Length: 380
Ligand code: UD1
Ligand code: UDP
Image 1 (cartoon, protein in one colour):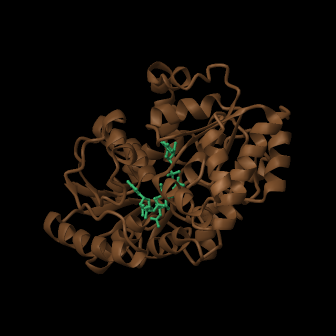
Image 2 (tube, protein in one colour):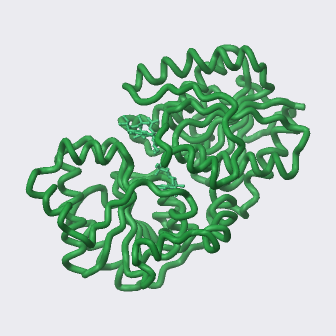
């Protein structure tokens, strides 16, 4: 049974590790061909993950690189179609909501190759987010939709998907499942390895664990001069008020936009402030170590929001809304967007060691196994 997995951006490569590991360990009857669109291409945004997470190297790399949404997606559609026609997989697996997901959804659905969408049903209800458009389109041409959360599953029902499972699902009679999050499986698995291998706390001299971890890459934040400046002003304010370090592994998009948009004075201050440690993107094992030992996480990343929760850390979400509504409902995370007043207030609250609860909302760490078994029963 041959399936094709398409990845392109950093979080998709990391997610693919859970799925590929499950196939390699337990389902030798499946031949998985990994195709990398090349949406992310820097060594520390792509190759590092294949190496350290033991993912089979992609058999094909489309090397599409960066460009406008239309350009990038169009080239991917064309190239993915060629590969699907050539390799004739029984199904194609995609993750999340990137342009690589969208391109695969369009290419595969038109030539009648069933799509398996992992992380289906998530909605921010903000169609100005490119990811929202990508995930809606992908969900509505998929055959098997695996939702990590109850709210994701409910969103699909609200959009007209049926609860009843078909013996043989199809694009016109898709099956939807609530199966937990395979990143939960994955983060726990690599957490043990990270404990043994990561040296990042020593390297950054933060073994005393008095630091905040931050990430910023959402286009809504990086491409707005107002928001980006407000955010970095706020980071400096947090450092001054709480005498704490902020560790910021920086996405290449943010580096580029900081250079273009930060006010010259602020840029100088950011450079001069040693407690704001801006470092290149790190591997997943180091990222886990940074997450597990931080006092607080401030992020606009979808994946990092969830990992904060997996590792029982409070999280400030630098977005106007989130798809991971269950996390916010527990009060272990708060939505602040880039509003300085809200971020400062939330930081003070969270650093004050409130009693936080982290009830299980991401399943039982068996999502990858559930997904592969269901694929076998549907497609063989
Ligand atoms: C993409 C996804 C986003 C996801 C993020 C994960 C879309 C529309 N967006 O956003 O959902 O959260 O990946 O990180 O698919 N760049 C490099 N080197 C790289 C990759 C990117 O320098 O290896 C720079 C380029 O200047 C590029 C910019 O980052 O133009 C943005 O990259 P792109 O893949 O278009 O979007 P992301 O912001 O990474
Ligand atoms: N990540 C990483 N190194 C970094 C930053 C993030 O390994 O320097 C991991 C993070 O732990 C999570 C994933 O990348 O698993 C999230 O990716 P990103 O924030 O780029 O995208 P999103 O999840 O928002 O789509």
